[in-house]
Image 1 (cartoon, each protein chain N blue to C red):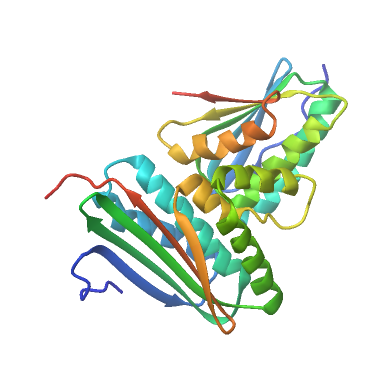
Image 2: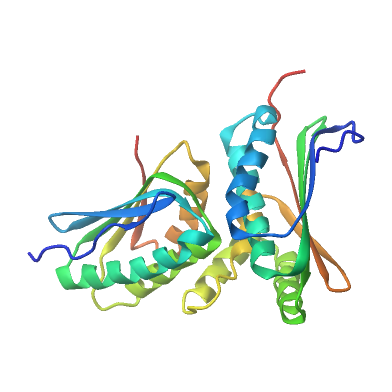
Length: 168
Length: 126
C-alpha cells in the first residue's frame, strides 16, 4: 500500500477498494496514524482528516460500480508539508453533472468561506441532500479542491500546506 | 414546568443525551457524527425544536466536548434546525459548547454562528 518509490513522500498511500460506509472510520484512523507523527500541530491534522472524511464519504455515497480509489500523499517541502488527497470513482451521469456544477462554482468563487456561507444559507430551506461536503473542504480544511473527469470517472484532488513537526 | 419527554438516542458509536435544568436543555453529544448518525441527528433535532417550543425553553446547549467529528450531513441537520428556529415565532438561544482539543469544532460551528449570529453562541469548555 505504501509507495516506496516516491522518495520525497513522508507518506504515500494508494488504495483501491469497493467503498462501504463502515470503512470510513477505520480509513480515517489509518490516515491519522500515518500523518500524525509528521504534523506540527493538532489543527493541521484536524484539517487533513476533515478533508479525507468528506472525500471518502463522497465516494461511498456517489460511486457506481465496484472500484474506487483513494490516494494520500504527504510530502516535505522547504516551507512545510504538502498534503494531497485524491479520490477516483465512477459516477452516474446526473451525479457527474451535479458535481461538475458544484465544483465549477467553487472554483469560480473568490472567497471559499463566503461561498460556503452562501451554500449553507441556500441549503437551509432544503430537506434533501446536504450538498455541503465538497465546499466544506476549502472552507474548513483550507485545501484547494479541483477535479478532472475521464469518461464516467470523477477525480477529486484536494491539496494544501501545513506545518511539519521539526524532526530533521 | 412540564417534564422532558426527550430521551437519549444512539448507541456505542454515537449518542445524544438530554438534560433539562430550569429552562435550559443541555444535549450531550458523544462519539462520531458520521454517515451512521445522520438520520438520528436529523430526526432528533426536529424533536428538540418541538420540545423547546412546548416547554418554552430559553436556551438549548449542545455539548460537543466528546463529539470527535461531525460530517457535512449531520452539519446540514444543524443548519436546518437553526433556520427553523430563526423563522419561528417563538425563538430560543442555541449555545455550542466546544472542546479546544478538537479544532474542527470551532471552524465548523463558526459557519453556524454566521448563519444566525443573534441566536447562536459558541463557548469553550474545559
